[in-house]
Length: 263
Image (cartoon, rainbow, N blue to C red):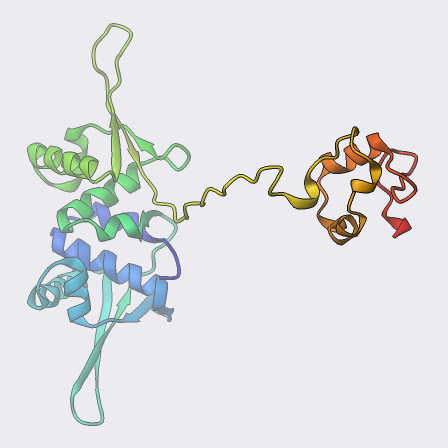
């Protein structure tokens, strides 16, 4: 995928539709923003029905019925299918309505882990959250009324989303000691890598970086090795050379830094 998230219009959550219809519409918008193009009517994308069925966890027949209902509701503007040269039917091309100015963002990694009902609730939470704090504080009654489902069913889905670590629930306690409105935070999955911890090198393993003991004779310094590793000198070694002033081969300028122009 080109992006780790995609956009959905607010009207998609506000419309009364089945969870399977919502899952199909969300997947089509996701594919259209990643691989589709724009035309005069909206954005279009070519996807196989088997691909949609596998992504949404439903059958191919359910995908066909869902697309018909989405055409009736106005989410899908047109559905075309070409005929190949061997007289076989090709892949459907879906033209979706424009997203418009009112939209919200959905994380792809989180959406792939959810079922149709869980995805609809998760998208509603993404619509209700604040852009800065990623938090919303709607009650179960308000969310159930918006989604058109029972309060008990919504509570079970919220617990499932919390167990999947998609959202986080935080209890609020008022100054009187009573429980107030709960706060919900929507997580965003960030792609990264684990940085391998490097093994620390001792002074004996550092080669030319080891310090010189002033009690030892000056002839013990390996000047050939010093010039060979001049570009890899540490700041501590240069300071030690400045302190010892080891012969005419160690040239310093007036500011106390090592003068490499001599070489």
